[in-house]
Image (cartoon, rainbow, N blue to C red; front, side):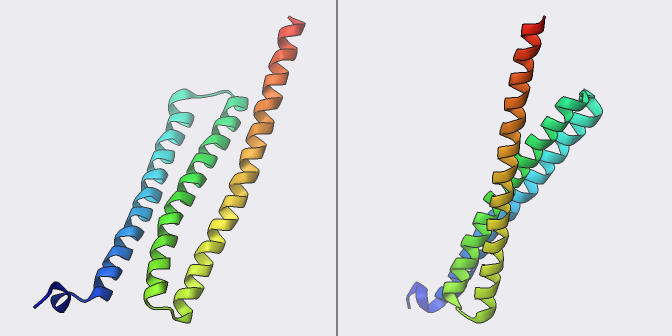
Length: 134
């Protein structure tokens, strides 16, 4: 009697897929808690001025979104494992939907990062102009 007689290989692959998906969910949950704590710190403890508050919010959003995408990478990996195992239309559509969400989020992060870079560049230029006037 071999190990394969006792344990179904399909079940092993399903368990591995669920573990991979759990990693993704843990990443997303921890990122959400971390962002919430930083947000509370920003609004309650630090009391920032309005200009830095906006910039800090942009940075927090970018970090959270990129962490969500990282978590989605694990969920996609899990879906790929399951879709190879049972390649039916429902699994393929679910994988396609997850990938579409990831692509949209990646696009939004890219736009957000560009905006953050523009704001930081503007602030650097504005600070240099203020230094010249003084």
